[in-house]
Amino acid sequence: MPTSSAPCPVHYRVEVADLHAHLFRVTLTIAQPAAVQRVSLPVWIPGSYLVREFSKNLQHLQARQGKRAVPLLHLDKNSWEVAANPAKPLVLSCEVYANDASVRTAWLDATRGFFNGTSLFLRVHGQDDAAHSLELVASKPIAHWSVATGLAATAVDSAGFGHYQASNYDELVDCPFELGSFWSGKFKAGGVPHRFVVAGAPPSFDGARLLADTKAICEEEIRFWHGKQRGSKAPHKNYVFMLNAVDDGYGGLEHCNSTVLVCNRRDLPRTTEADGKKPASPPKRGEGYTTLLGLISHEYFHTWNVKRLRPAEFARYQYDAEQYTPLLWFFEGFTSYYDDLLLRRAGLLDNAGYLKLLNKTINQVQQTPGRLVQSVAQASRDAWVKYYRQDENTPNATVSYYTKGALVALCFDLTLRGEGQTTLDEVMRTLWTRCQAGPMREADFAEVLAALGGRSFDAEIQAWVHGTGELPLKDLLAGHGVAVHEDPAQLAQRLGLRVGESQGLQVKVVLRGGAAEQAGMAAGDEWLAVELADGSGWRMSKLDDLLLYAGHSRQVTALVARDKRLLRLPLTLPSVASTTTWRLAAETPRSISAWLEPSPE
Image 1 (cartoon, rainbow, N blue to C red):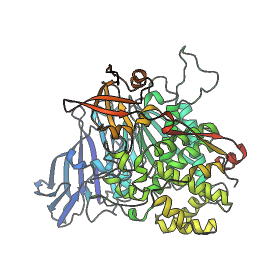
Image 2 (cartoon, rainbow, N blue to C red):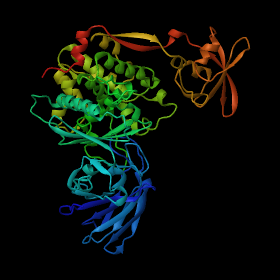
Image 3 (cartoon, rainbow, N blue to C red):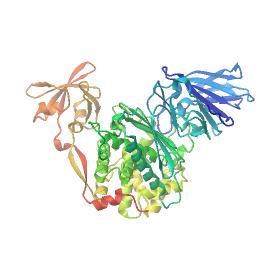
Image 4 (cartoon, helix red, strand yellow):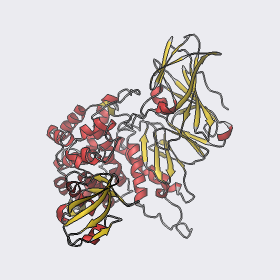
């Protein structure tokens, strides 16, 4: 095993305690502890705004100095205190249970290991800004594995086991580790080395195609932020994509020079057709693969927008409690606007494909009654208690700062383009320069809009960001060559329901103001049957059965089971035209191209 350089003030050693018990062993050495040294494990991970209580997975925490055991005082749910001799190193050891396959915590079994530093590494209070080092041990059970991380290596073997170093605690916990027998590929974008590793890929996986498409995304985003003539380079020296392909899953979490992704392995690009022959030309991108590329685009865009250009409230992360900002509509919502738009500009979508994705986002927002209740600024601050704690009332009381935030970005972009002074692209780049790739406030956004747009946009900010009225999407889209057609909505939307049909007809959500709510339906009901005015009754197993059995009747009785009781609920069926969904259609290609294609340098 390679030897490390001089020891750091704070050093961690990570090894496997038990693969089958899903246990990492972590040893923390503090070279010069305080006389009363406090340590704590974060309760949340930046980028995912929910208190997740990572300390629940920590066990067998012990402390010693030399051969002497030192008592630990458990102060609260995630922090401890040690009375130590400052002249001697203080060593703390513990085990961490790692059995969460999400992007946010840690995982360990016989086939794969993964961890975020916020799940494993106790924070040494008073030494957050000191250098931190890490030794990753290649014990016998995992000696055949490889390692992927964005953290700087100081002395590692060919597989990546060995010693790493971070300039401070923030950098340490912002560099997740992937361990296992994964697929790995490399490319350069903007002169920056990029690595892509995939765990759980099936034999049909087309790694070359994923690399080529990801490279196109990265090059387009580096060009977006810096351009060929802007004299600046990407802010990261290297980058790692870590993708875990699973049977059913989706998600991503951004980091400064890496991202962690989860996708359905069926959505990965494939090398072969059913007959086993290689296609003569690249197959069309399926909806699932396009969604994966959008996720890659989204998380990579965060390299600039939220990891460096970040809310002023996040100038320094506070790991022990919630950290609020009203700006997630900008940092997540505007990123959600650009993730698909930059797929189009990178040539991975055509205009029709992009409009299809935009259409989906618009309908998601339009079909959410909560858009008239909660502003995107409120949604940003409420993320800790609402967005990440969704229930049956979420669509009625909240709006997503991702989806509506993306539409707010669309409205600003089309307004700016329509007035001919500037574009949202230039606003984003100017904010990057103005805030020196650092903390940003809403006032910065407003001032840059006014400076580049030639007028105040305070009224738009108040209405679109802090208000709950409808966005002027139709007029703005029409002004850029996109017509909005309204088609009849699906039956569930007309009734104001979201249902599950895997085990009978289960009511999941009752939307505010809909026919189902007026009839008295509630989330959790099982819709068993429908009765007609002539006394006949029909058993229902799926929602479409309602139209089959009701015929032309507008008045029916829904028979539902609630808490083991049978209820008969009078239901008025809405007309087909009562609720609509939007369908976008390109009518002026030149206007659309001016918006969707990259601006000339």
